[in-house]
Length: 179
Image (spheres, rainbow, N blue to C red):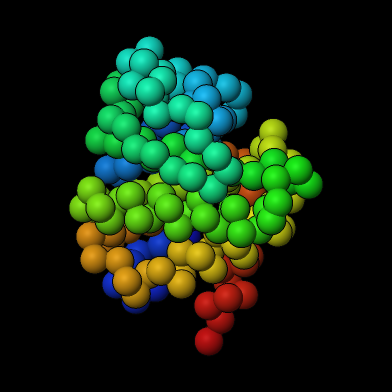
């Protein structure tokens, strides 16, 4: 695990499964527009949470790229799931703005609920085709830009499933926060 301090926020990089973050209050789902079980992150979260999550999501769908909604976590070891619909790379425009909106809107919902810790996956970098090298600066820079305004949030984790994605995030953090 790699950590760094941004204002009063502890930013952590973790290699692992977003659905198994028992020390985090809210996990972020890289959702589909209908907020249903899918592949990747959405599949892992829905399988671990159980059918109650999809039932709670139904009246909240559909959502648009960049939007975020919040539900209970059901059988997950967390209190909340924040569902964000990331942009499909090369289809949803402007994809950079929409991806940054996902992180911004998730942070706003976390603050509204007075959540102290949140875990993000690498939104849109799987089936939605967003190149990880372009997505990392958008995610980290958006989080960094909002860190000073966060009151409740004290810990933000980026949970990366693959070693490659973890190393890419770590390299970006090391370059960004070099003294």
